[in-house]
Amino acid sequence: MAGFDDIPAASWAAYDLATFVQDGARMVDEAMAILSVSAESHKPVGDVRVIVPAKLVERGTTRR
Image (cartoon, rainbow, N blue to C red; front, top):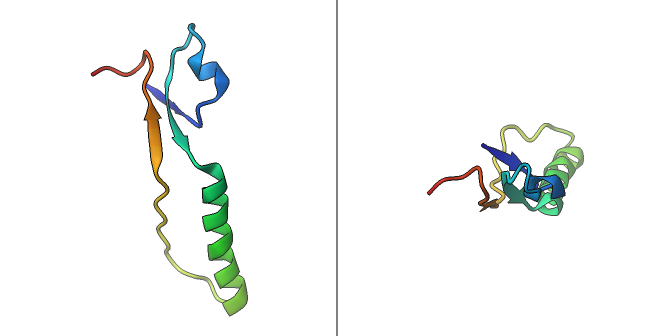
């Protein structure tokens, strides 16, 4: 089991939940860049795939 965004409660001993950490600011920047292209061209940009790296923070809910 894993969560996302590594909220503080994920590290509490009662949960000890593994979580993925993503760069939220980068996700916003990428989304705004795509929207800007669409707004400037007055056309939808179509399918766009952006890969933002994530890091797994291993805790008690992960097993090796």
